[in-house]
Length: 281
Length: 325
Image (cartoon, each protein chain N blue to C red):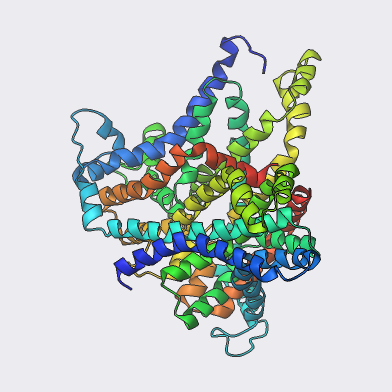
């Protein structure tokens, strides 16, 4: 947009500054509190920690990682997230390819049902799936939660990846067909490599989604600390906290955030592209 | 299961599923070889769709129909309960308050995120540090609602009057207003708004990113022409930008409204529905998991879907239009 005189832009800068501060203060408060001593944290506000004399400590982190069971929870989160995302991305890609590049009777109808399922709340499916899991002894197991996440994410996976694959130029595929390549070969050698950006943004999006999930983990894994991911451990810590454990709680919250934030900050471009692909076209 | 076997299983699934999937496609192709090209073209798509359709059938399609059925059955699903589960929802004060709060979530979260998202997208568009602003606002999107809840529990922390206020908001409030501190999460006049504030903080980045992208797609000539015609910023926003952004704002609003209805984590972690802050999703969790009442839990899910359905209808229409080639 056209540039305007400096003075008139001052309100714009000030508003943005205030908004950014509002978004950052809660995060900074958490970070500062997590390196303060239990005594400091209960006797003065976190902003005092920014003033000398500095008395920062890493004890809180040592304690939550060793005795709080958070190390175990971190591994559990990884063991839940990585296989779940792999399953949903690969199964979703195959189905999306069929929708995007193959003509068949009933394609439109099935796709519309899929879109309807995309927007119906997953809560509608919880009770029967839990009953099924109780019968099959899948409740509280990792394979159980992998399948549940994959199943719930499937409409979104197919929808997003199909839109991308349908937009690819026809000539690429025709050339391969002329060369006599079989359908699986065309998919593996041509469709998948060109779709890498869409696959990556979907996988990152789902990685954060599954990593940050609490509801499904609570319902399908139960409260067992042996299988609990970080979100569940953290929420247990909050429930057990009677106002004394702020130093542990803040450190634990930061530990649980560190990994997804790292993923997000390094892969931000793809993640944002994933958000956009899902919502605007 | 020991941790080593679990880790091995997880690694096996991560590597094995894609490999097995390709093996499956390859086998299908081999099995189809004897048939004519026409038959192959007809059968192949369904073989490729099968894994996804099975997952969808087992985890979404069948369970949804089953939930509808379960909502008319007793707590253990053993016998028919007629409309008892729904009557309970209509009569129970707790359920009423949950529904009211969920509606409040929908209105305030949607309005708040749209307003902040639109404001940030428009303002940031005019400055050179746009990327920085958007990165800061979108950061909470990567954080779990649980961690977000811990962050804000600390912001809302309350100490009795006379003690040092360690919560950021109470420290600011008592200093500025000279009034006694507020128990934000317990006081029923503030607690729902406080929880929704966390939701807005967590979700605005999502709205900002999408609105900002749509703003970049508004044709430059359109803005230029309005400027030449002498439009000021407000007129430009009202007569050019907002009409252009309308389809995007509609999609974002429906997505926000749906997520507001499903809001669970923040409430579960911060108040667990106490002090009249219960919402539909938490009610469902309580009935399903704490009370083990499948009938009532299913009725809550059906109610949730019924309340969302007008928003869903809009969304399905938009998505269908979008998905058409």
